[in-house]
Length: 180
Image 1 (cartoon, rainbow, N blue to C red):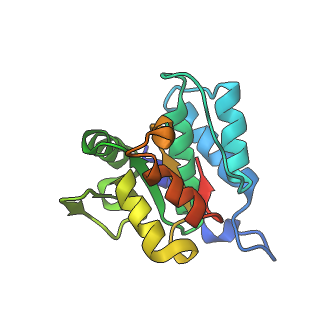
Image 2 (cartoon, rainbow, N blue to C red):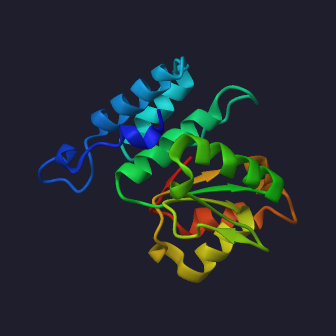
Image 3 (tube, rainbow, N blue to C red):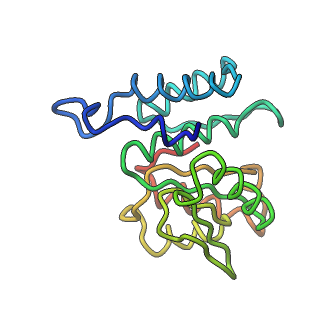
């Protein structure tokens, strides 16, 4: 089952609110993880709940502890809200790897990729791109950029003298966005 099959119908909108019911988003995501034989760890569960409530999340857990599943929840929730989400990483190989993984989960029609030298399905609701691509969007469009969630992978590059700007600029220029 593709995760997009779990997207709530427009009828799930809460009267008087612009978003979808956070409990509904959370529940549908957890149900999808269970169909894949997965159970959320405490840190994942708390992060997914916070994302559903519209909070920003920084998830600093060890490699292999399931941060990617939380990122998938962020993409799912943005898509359910009719927003575009971005996955960023420092190198094209990692961006490409994530692109194919997200295509498998959300369907190829819902995932695009933009790197410095190529682009595929650039109007998709989920975009995988290098960190510099997102930084350039943030510089060009600022808070007016049309995106709902940003997943910044390999965040330890934040302090890198040569590459850190690509993580710093979106954090400064896109302050109203949900991030993971």
